[in-house]
Amino acid sequence: MGSQVIRKTKSVCPVCLGVVDASVVARDGKAWMEKSCPRHGDFRILLSNRSECYKRLNDFYFSVMEGKKKVLEYEIWPTRSCNMSCPICSLGDIKQHKADLVPSCADIEDVVRKCKASFFTLSGGEPTCRPDLGEIIAILRKHHKTAIINTNGLKFTNIDYLKDLVRAGLERVNLQFDGFKREVYPVLRGVDLLDVKLKVLANLKALRVPVILNVTIAKNLNEGEISGIIDYAAKNEFINGVTFFTICNIGGAGKWPLDNYIVPDEVVGILEQQTRSRISSESFYLFQKLHMSLKSFLSQKTCFYNRVYVLVRNDDGGYRPIDELIGLKRLEPVLDQYHALFLKDQFIAKLYFALFFPIALLANTSPSILKEFFLMAVSYFFKTRHYLGSGRFLSVSISTSCDPFKMDYGIVKNCQNEIICVDERSGKFGHQGSICLYGMGLEKPRHE
Ligand SMILES: [Zn+2]
Image 1 (cartoon, rainbow, N blue to C red):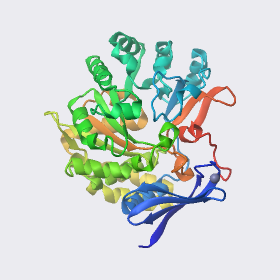
Image 2 (tube, rainbow, N blue to C red):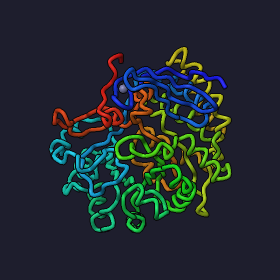
Image 3 (tube, helix red, strand yellow):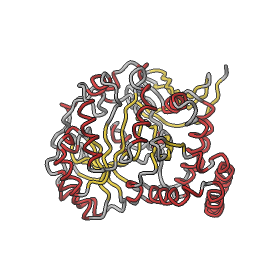
Image 4 (cartoon, helix red, strand yellow):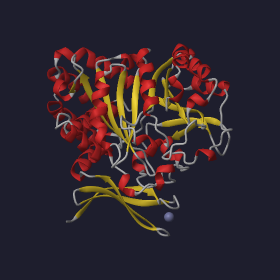
């Protein structure tokens, strides 16, 4: 079978990290990144198991995401220490972490005060390793920012500790949760954590703290649990969403056999299979076009490796795909027209979208959900805290991040994950740009 070049880009050699030319190629029904390093030879990395779908989204995304885009949320790393040593940690061996790269509360306040963004996720290593975490959260609240935390949750088995953070202003917990199969935890985390995670979820539920479940997915390990985790989340209104991260070839997981890696489009296919096409790949694909169009219209960055979707909770504990309530297929002509116009004139395209998208949405959205959906979408895109408290919707994201294998400078340009941390080289606390580039120790390529 022949091959077709989907896009030319720049990447890095996974061995020496030198910048190299790369091609995204469709072959055998799959999409691959192909590149070669003069010193380390040829590399071919699977990007998608469905090249046709990948190409359609690729062409849409790289047109509408042209131009300058902004970021509305940041990650702050208050520490690089951790109370776990996960075999797959993206930071690698925990003992090598520079524990002294810790900003003071005054450093954090100084940066937060000057930053226009409204959402800040505390991350890094494990934020709860900071004894003054409550104080950091209170600083965010003082400056009217929304405080979110990425955590393994170990310390939240103590409900009083969790209560203190909520009182200080913590507004959402992104909890690392790898599913209900006990045997998964020792592989991904080094120890069995299932009972700990269940206890933490019970505490979060008792205090009604909005939660996102961050699930790491590895092939032949826990991909069988995807729809089960969604069913559980749908039944529990305190859960805002589920994010499935496919395992990346970086840090500890970089030593894994290649068979364990899985790409987001494979996960979409698995989800379709497990839900017996209730959540179909086609619907998922259409929703990406909608999301990309809105991000483009609002000039906001969004990563091409992210796949997002929304489910609507029923009263009986089940859910309906958003498609059943807003008619994505009938919105598609407006999105396609926006795309076509955008290639010619961005201003005209945005004018068209501002006029015709609301009309199409009004005409095709079920009245029972219209107002709520509209308020949720406005809150999500403009980053106000309203959507965190909405119990009606459940977001489902399927995501991965750049690693030295699938690193793509065309994509990283619109990376929405930017970090604020203490720089290893300068020792200064501040904005470091894309987390993907920074995590690999890379800088922007010179041609940009
Ligand atoms: Zn090389």
